Image 1 (cartoon, rainbow, N blue to C red):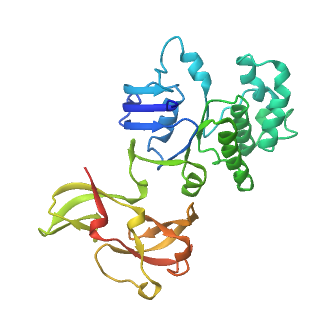
Image 2 (cartoon, helix red, strand yellow):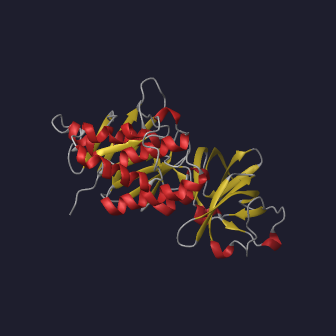
Image 3 (cartoon, rainbow, N blue to C red):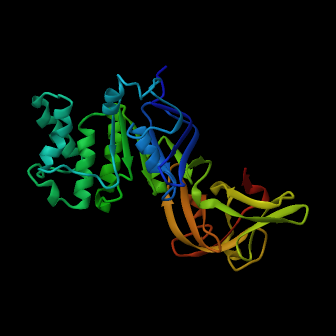
Length: 341
């Protein structure tokens, strides 16, 4: 059985002088899989990618790379050449697009007879034909992003790390880039880890979606986390993430608490009830984001009393009168509230 691409246990990394720390209790990335990292800005996604690229070493903990110690002095250079990372704002070298694409091939000692067919292959994949002689400094942000991705793919890496790979790409080319990611994974069996704010993209491309918040891996998306000082009547407790807005849950609690509500446990009330109603854990809001995911599900973000994300079967969108910019009413049972220890 093949060893996982990465195994992390009790890994911690903190930038010097910063209060933020990335803390990973346990994480496994299987070889040959596509993994999406989802979370807000500052969640730790880019920091994790830098560690996986072997450019930053954790301050503590254990990290294995294909079953071995990646920091072994004799193998560190070899290991680093197995991994290629494309950053959110990629740096292109001086010279032409051709110079950028063949740079890694030169460094790795790839015979120059292989350069042209490899360049043609990646240019066709990312629609860069005709730009070979173009100065890299004259490229648009989207072109630069695609050249950086092509420069990575041309090396046929064992691991490909992508920090928001379509953030600067023209919307007309996003599907092309996504297709390339899937093609590289399937054709070369490359393990791919990418970060994104696009839930739909994450579910379309990845075999597994990992959520991050405040430097930690969490069970659900960051959007349904709330904190506050608990009060209780003895049978039920509640917090007020905003003055006058209560999230209620069973039990007798006190002190500061954080809770999360699974997107699968939030329901949309039927249209005939879609008026401002009072009730336990019942909130109104406007549909501010609507994306289609896999398995016939829609990802719905509701902005209003509270900002919530919920998952809804696509066939229920019309039935529940859910559409962009439409006001809806949502609720969840007290038992659906999970307290974070």
